[in-house]
Length: 241
Image (tube, rainbow, N blue to C red; front, side, top):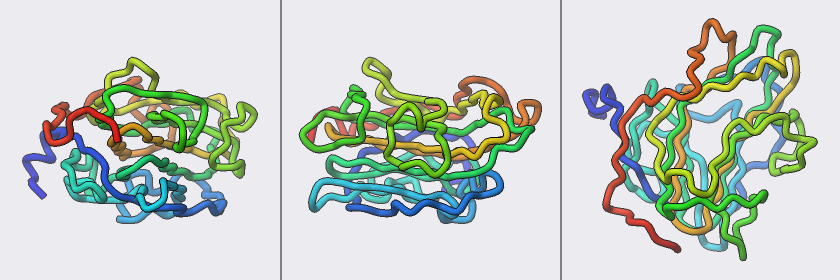
């Protein structure tokens, strides 16, 4: 991988192309704390995934150190931190969910992560649903949930806080950006972090890296902090499937 390219952390946004039916819907064993937040093991554990797509299509999260999307083969930003990142990719309507259950300590006040996305439909559709057939649904949402609940639940009783959600009118491309969330009111609880993407209109890639939980004094506390630059490639112009 080009070291200079990674140092600059340039963003080469990607499209989608290929991923599958059901991946995983097992309830994970509860970790003592959030682990493998940078995916530097080269795999997901203890993260779990759930993906689904229309018949014959593919959709999945992948841990990758490449600068091309695992299904579409389109260019993507290099990992913002370390050697690996998690990337959602698909080639037809479907959804991808990445989640981990863990205990929040009494000192855990802040959750940070680096996030980027490329929405080639050029607009978001945000119904309160993960459905992808007979509906237009193009969105990303990040929720802190009660541990052990259904991973697809959108019941407000199961969602402690919606930390991030795309909305109609948002810019379609986000460069790698550090996000920070105050989670101090949930200290001492068992929680689930869920990162969910749905695409029904056109290619929509999401990348996640450097997920951390800890004291506010230790973690950077800016609400958002760009860590790259954004250039949408001409290879995948806006459109619809």
